[in-house]
Length: 138
Image 1: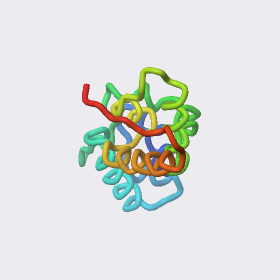
Image 2: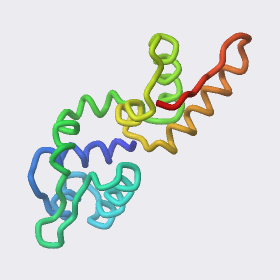
Image 3: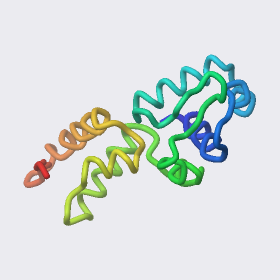
């Protein structure tokens, strides 16, 4: 997730509703960029940001606490390489395995993005004898 997207979520978490032009001013971008960013965020995390022509934008209530801490957002892995390293570390040190849903929530990514990262980890593990990535349902 882009740092600007994280800042946008943080701003939305601090207020009930905020106009697009106010968000644009805070972020130093155009209102069109704010709309594009919100569309992209909503594609990655469906329905997290609600839009209203009169009121502006609003972070869905059950998600607000999650994004109120900007430092928490900045600690999330930022790209595929960081997420893959994070996933590998969790797999190696967590005897219970890793929940796809929990990992996606922790890294603010979709299940499809997780799958790409999982394949990357699987390819890394193929270099070592006796290590393999096993997936199971439930």
